[in-house]
Length: 332
Ligand code: 9MR
Image (cartoon, rainbow, N blue to C red; front, side, top):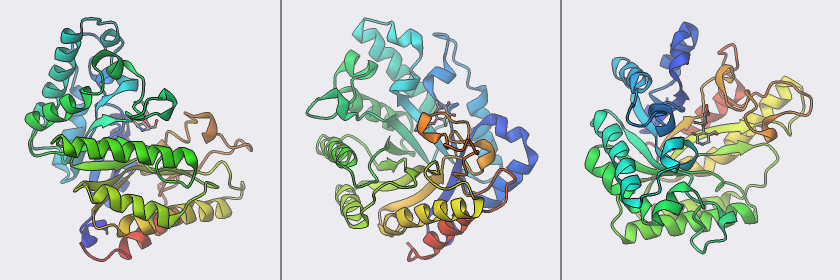
């Protein structure tokens, strides 16, 4: 359905999900794209220095290709998922060589087969107190802010065809924290553009939650500022945490659908928005249902219902809300 409006629609998956025939059938019916949920992360690929194993990622890329799906790589480098052995390297030149070798190897391996790569994930964290809002983590500590430019130039050289994305969270809502993150991310993107750093897309993770304050006008204006830099927009990880919703399933599904609709209406309208991926297609496989974060857990202990399909792969009101939002978009 998204394709008829010139948008793509997809979901995050892992290779273990490919062993579930009913899920695969639903995925092929619903999606035109997949993204690697975690198996493209450096720590997953090369837990032992010098012994990378691309078997799982190869399987995902091959699954996409053999089923006519677009493939999205997530991610190039994410501070949370660099291998432990990398953090222990104190020689800056050696660490930089190894980081760039990893990006070059991973991106060139799938050259021409990846629609977009999250070259860098979640580099902003206001708690650092830095004027630029960059997160204090292993990459900034080793290389300073210049690592961002290094990564994107290496990515472009390794796969000139892939759209290169900077991916981050915590921009969607109307709070001082979100506003501060929007300001820091816009400054990061503006700086990249001014230095000729090849950032093609900003990835809006869009991990939404019921009960958060949202201002569509503030959000739409910020999207216009990002797009005004010549940067495309992509919803990369959308889902809805329903911990604040009542236990009744019909009411909970209604509120989840309303949250999708409230966010998607102004977001999909932006002409720079090229597509949307959910962080999972079905509640059967969601990080929120696994309770990865404390705020995912519902007070009543009931399993969350964050995604377009329920655990039995049945479409929910959330699915209809996403479909209605896409249909409302003028054809690109
Ligand atoms: O959902 C993902 C989970 O299965 C992985 O174990 C984890 C670490 O790789 O990453 C989760 O996905 C995160 C994504 O990579 C970046 N945005 C936040 C997502 C949820 O933590």
